[in-house]
Length: 286
Length: 255
Image (cartoon, rainbow over all chains, first blue to last red; front, side, top):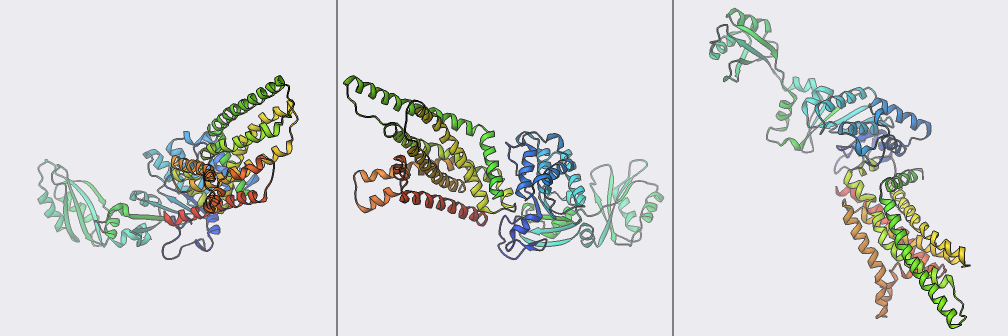
């Protein structure tokens, strides 16, 4: 990621951003990227508007255009109310948003965000994610994160990198489909009189046409939850539901248990690989 | 050019929004004021004695007050320069804001010149304070103003050199204290290194003494612009800033 921003030179290979090589034409690349490092690069002794004006000038803006962009990004990133406050006195969520505002001030083609939601509270995380999503229409956004649900939530294209090697690059949906030849459904069954053994239910479910395998989840609890696996397109949910109901049991829940990105991630990087070394990069196309 | 000014303005903001600049200005005014008061007292005392003895040896403000005071300023400056330069890069490296500068479409040399220039401007503000004291001499006497101007030029050049060295050292570490202490050590060394000529007259001693920033200031304090000293300071400034540029470039390869 730091190679893309021209902060570090590549140790091997080449990198191009918006058609410009990071080694050959770093200035052209830098003009076209907005970058938010893991900790927003803020000067605590500066006021928000002063800081944005400073960054704008660094990126080559001036005069009326600069003022217009400062006002625009303040609106866009919801920081207009802290315009005159010192950056050192802002909360973590505001700092992150000022960091984003700083990154988009010169309207770059590519936005590079390094773990934009790290260290925020759930409310701030949501706000930041919404903000990033809303920016996706105007910029190509590359963001790295270790929080996998975030990827499912906001990204279109996923690149999984393990120890510097590219492991997979695809859309979220395709990745899920690719690693999932089997389809699984989660079924929760309850008996009317409360004395229902899971072996009995398991046997019944296995008889439903198309079912390949029935796993029992948490047999210790009173709830009977099964994971029913089948080859794709072989099993209809109706059959499964009917089998349960016709046996005189209640069907409490029936839903697709899609493989989460987390499982895909572990599968692709090898479950023994420590998560920290594997970086997940996601991309959203404008 | 515009970028240099942008960086410089930002750094000046950093000095003057925080207490750094005011603290330095106050301390400098206090210390220099003390030196001024001392030397003036001595001068007045001597004059009185002379009148009592009935002598009429002419007394010279330039030779007896301005010249020694300028030398004093150049030494006091040594102590203040580390405090000016230590934060320049060390702070940005620690807080990670260096990444913002390094990924902006500006040249490294523009960042360096901007920062160095801001340090020179703050240093000039310190020098400006001394002009206040010297101003009193013009109010009550008639000293020659040209040597004083040359003296200020010398102080600026000497300051510029040491500030360039300090800027360089600041790029080497994340820790401001380390940057400050190392700069202070080198400033001190560049001052006392000329003392070897006091007891040693071999060639190596002369060469060593040549590196002393203070010896090169002497001619300026006398009101003489010697091209030898001018060249010394200018090459020193160039080398310091050049080393800073190399060091900043190496940051990218090392990290």
